Image 1 (tube, helix red, strand yellow):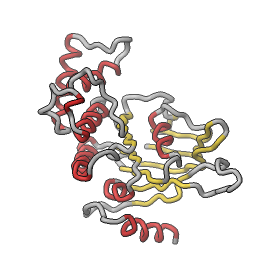
Image 2 (cartoon, one colour; image 1 turned 135 degrees about the vertical axis):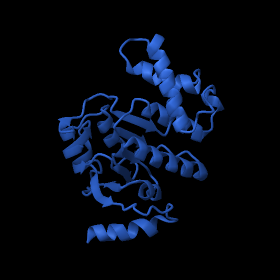
Image 3 (cartoon, one colour; image 1 turned 180 degrees about the vertical axis):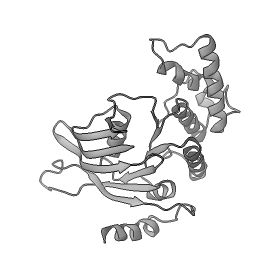
Length: 260
């Protein structure tokens, strides 16, 4: 589904990513971990189409990914992108309106009726069926993230991009969100790419875990080289277990196996 062929990304001549070479099959759940500033979110932006590779090819179904967002790719950020003056239902319906051609995004007649039915259905699916008339300031952090996921899923994307979506949530709410995302992934047959700083979360959710890091370092020119995928670890979830208690318990044996 996704082919990454020797992709690199630079800003003002400073490489952020280099030598990315991976393929991803439809239906995989790929989690991305690594230090801040190593290009994880930049890679997500290239998949979304808001950034383009400086070098190499990034292909979707054998064709270059469009250099603009499309309905086949939905994204959820850590910061909630909602309209404070609109209700939960209106926020999700707005996602339909802004996806159509025109300047205003307004929906009329049968289009508005269908958008309302679709929005109510997806909000019920993510657990917000009881909150259709609430405004964003009345929602908890977990509810706002459920709203953001509903907005992303309404267009029925094939690919869902998650950029640290649960970093600001309390542990209990994060566990609920994990179960929600896993259920939606399976029910909607999504291909998911998720950036996280929590390695435990990455192993718990993903079917593959990518570690982004720099293979080459120059102490006299720290910006001379970009990061790449240093480890591509398959994760067997045939018997999915709760998230491990410590990072070392999980990643140390897998990294040792990958390096051998």
